[in-house]
Amino acid sequence: MLNSLSGRFLILTMAFVMLAEVLIFVPSVARFREDYLLARLERAQIASLVLLADDMIDPALEAELLENAQVFNVVLRRDEIRELVLNSPMPHAVDQTFDLRMSTPWEMMRAALSRLANPTPQVIRVIGKPVQMGGELIEVTMDTGNLRKAMIDYGLNIAKLSAVISLITASLLFFAVRWLMVRPIRGVVGNMIAYARSPEDTRRIIVPHAGVTELRDAEVALNALQTELTHALKQKERLAQLGGAVARISHDLRNILTTAQLFGDRMEMSEDPMVKRIGPKLMNSISRAVSLCENTLAFGKAEEPAPRLERIELAKLVGDIIDSERLSAGDHDLSFAEDVPSGLMLRADPEQLYRVLSNLVRNARQAIVATGKPGEIAICASEGDDSWIIDVRDTGPGLPLSTRENLFQPFAGSNRKGGSGLGMAIAAELIRGHGGELALAETGEAGTRFQITLPKEIERRL
Image (tube, rainbow, N blue to C red; front, side, top):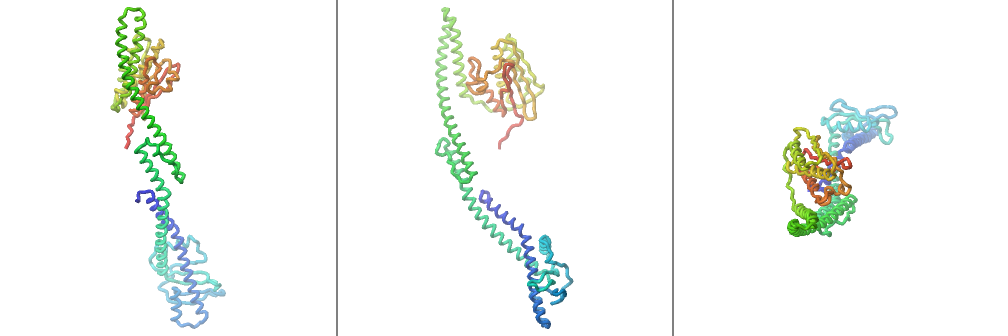
């Protein structure tokens, strides 16, 4: 209950109302103190009028008048004459004097707080202006005990009233929030739960209808997300079905082509000049077709394991790759260079990183050899604050625009005759498994550069 949105609104509203009451408590108590003192002055003035009407009054009546006014004595100033009208013994001398005619609001609040904080009774002198033009000045002395008690009672009444007001206000806000906000939010959550059970069912896609602008915006965004996800799931299902069909077709086609390859092998033994001339070309075409079928089947069943990260020495791994590719280059005028700092250690799966770098270098070698011109392939590495950077450069002819657009898409990124277009897609997938990125940094007539970025920190998800 208290952890719900409406429950927290209830608590916050009560707290804010009580805070507001606290902020107005001091001015309210100061005003009450002023009214209390003015009331004492008014009573004292009425008591003095009795004596002015009859100079000879009984002492008992005088004491009763002073007790009713809750003062010790009364001084009136009339016609420029200051006169002690009523008088009774005081417990001790006057401790403080307050002139209500010249007190500022800040002084009244300070005096009120001081009186509440001081429980010791004092005798104070209060000066004010008589009512109904009853003179120029009236002055009384009084005890503060009753004043402080009345101020405390008034403060308790304010606290009780504040509690009642805050409870009523918070309750009204509680039900308003539950109706206007919590109920629509629960509707959105319920729709999300129902949609998660069957995301392919378009009937479960939320229909925006909330009256609150923010909630309606959330419903519109959720509607767009659910619609896109439903379409994506349908497309994924179709692609999965298509992939299954392609795999079956590739399997059958591979068997057919294998049979054709066997017959082709026999044709190569023919002495017919025409067969000898056409046979090798036919065999090459069949071999490429078989290879494409096998790559398609392998990619469809491929489930690359998660990388087994360990600290490896990059220079040694790069040296093995270059030695292997140098042998594959044969007599072609192709040079290899490596610029890897000695002792550079990075965190990666050695087998998967070898496959990625070997694929990049092999592609560069094949591109340069195909031109028949000399060339160079270089592998460079550097270490940053939060990642390792590996660059693979070549001086080949560069990649055509059509290849760049689909470079990392399976079966679409190859510009080499007979290539399946799977190598770069798999390489990019392996690097993503490390939390890094494989990107085409630049390509053109001067050559091509691929960049691998491997993060140093391992992302941990709770």
